[in-house]
Image (cartoon, rainbow, N blue to C red; front, side):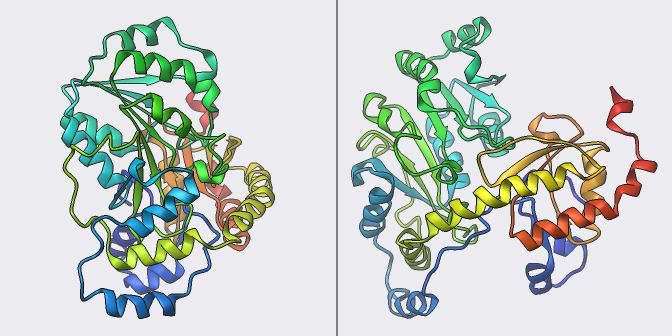
Length: 371
């Protein structure tokens, strides 16, 4: 199996296995993509009826109705919202516009940030930093060297661990970066799994930081990665001078997300399911001989440390049409995987597959032997 740089590569996997795409979508269990196992309640017939009329016209280039719905959900006015064709696209667009002198990445981090930084930035610095530890002397030196056209990037909750830092914990760092007057990108794509309240977010700091951008994916929480939509939150009109596509979203994108945002039960259903299934799944994974440990998470995925090299476990499970995410390219070594939390039934199938493949421990070098 190929060394994918992203999770969710079900189409590429199907091609490599000579599996018809329709069969792959129906039968492959993809734990490599961290998508909400709870889908919002949408009226597909209404979406289709609207699309049959609207598809004959260009979409609203201002996306005012959708911005109003997103603004209501995230407690922001329209002038602080820019919509994009997914967050990955937004990352490339931002770096292409800014062309930073230096990019400071707080790692581990989503690979698109590393790819964009290395393509568009003159200099890229990666820092492994636990924000609860305070600002170290070495980090202070790195920040001191940033120019006004530099970019600092952090993801909260982060991936692949699913660790979350409160706005209060991040405030000393963000305040220091604000005084440097550099650009700050804060990716809160997984924050809805913790809550929508501004209490959990750094959105309240936007009005004091004109060069801070919050990147908010909508596809993960609303279980629609096939719909490419993301939002950028900033101070009012902070990105107006940048060049953006005139029509970043299709009418189908807009209609789906409008319905998803207004499902009154989605937030409660997601919260209740994860509060029950996440600890149960973590406990079940911990009983598997192939798993050394499972990190606690506040999101819809968990990071596991494996007893055999992760790529071998990925290959073995893939042969049974189960995909998980090798985390070596996050810089976490050869013995880590990220596993999404899916439905109870799918999670049970994964755990059973892990038990059935414990024989790998007799043929593969073990973690303890590599220390």
